[in-house]
Image (cartoon, rainbow, N blue to C red; front, side, top):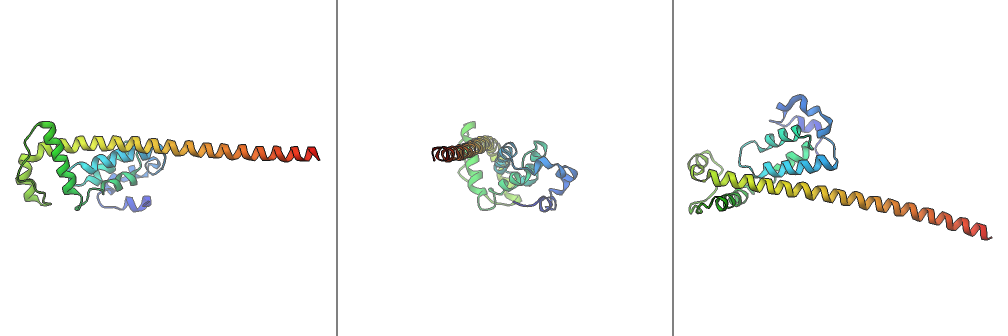
Length: 179
């Protein structure tokens, strides 16, 4: 996990200034990590520049773990963006009942955004929002449930060890008493 100093020095995130000194955004506990997954997975699906900054601001505002929120945004990178955004477009077109565009292709350029997004922006952004919410909620509850399961398992193991230790001590005492 990157150190707080390394994250504070990232371009774009430094604008958060003193907010980065809040210790709650650096802690690893069930609530902050679950919220970080919700935030990171949501912003990962939104086709905007500076997803990382949007994720960082949201993480700070909701006191989620900042490094995890920002790291999850990188799931959408230049290699994964075309399939992610195409899926988002399909979801949005399905929800709106729009016919699918025959000329769909993704290009990471300003011209593509200006010319093509005119007809595709509504299904793309609606689909991105819906997919982001669904993925974020699934991520939140999955992390929360897995964390709870891990803690319960650790408690059971700890209780079992104490019981075995107590049982062995009682056995030793019984053997001493029988001698």
